[in-house]
Image 1 (cartoon, helix red, strand yellow):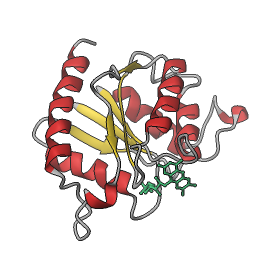
Image 2 (image 1 turned 135 degrees about the horizontal axis):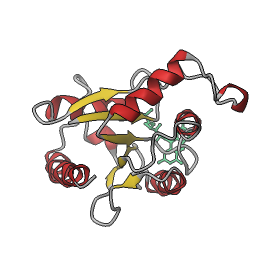
Image 3 (image 1 turned 180 degrees about the vertical axis):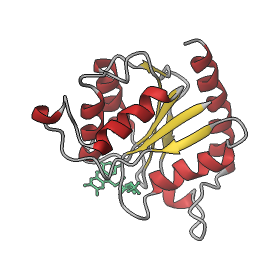
Amino acid sequence: MKIVAIVGSIRKDSLNMYFAKTMQERYQDKLDIEIADIRSLPHYDQDEENNPPQSVKDFKQSIADADGVIIITPEYNWSIPGVLKNALDWASRVEKVFIGKPVFPMGVTMGTLGTIRAQLHLREILTGLQAKQMPAAGNEILIGFANQKFDAQTGRLVDEQTLSFLDSKIEVFIDLIKTV
Ligand SMILES: Cc1cc2nc3c(=O)[nH]c(=O)nc-3n(C[C@H](O)[C@H](O)[C@H](O)COP(=O)(O)O)c2cc1C
């Protein structure tokens, strides 16, 4: 299955990016996970939406071609980062590539609440985009206290309890994709 991962942090040592890479490696036998390049997207501009820059065309095409999307976001000031909202705004116009697309929201923070506030905002946005969201109840991937759960050398998620919960929820997401 072809999956696009959109990571809401563009910093070099992003824990959310490390999480995306952990999944890319861990599930390589069943999922082909491509991490989208949202750093190269310009600010959304309605004047440009009918003939956007190539980076926007490529981003939207990758979502259109994917069987599902995983969005992995930090929480910034109780919401999602602007870079992520910008990417979603581009994807919401002209060819509306999120309509009916299976989407699994996730998030990583060093804080206590595991990005719950950001994910609730993200789910509102995804409702506006008419995505087919992974049902929230029982399936929320809220990774708090992340500094204790990632290997400082490799940058990979190593917390066994989190990984085993994730394994089971990835199977639920695959089942959701199969229903589309
Ligand atoms: C501008 C800004 C706002 C933040 N606001 C929150 C917040 O509301 N809730 C939270 O749990 N963490 C907050 N944080 C901490 C981030 O969760 C933490 O920096 C996290 O590691 C960012 O993700 P990244 O490692 O993928 O870049 C904030 C960080 C920044 C830079």
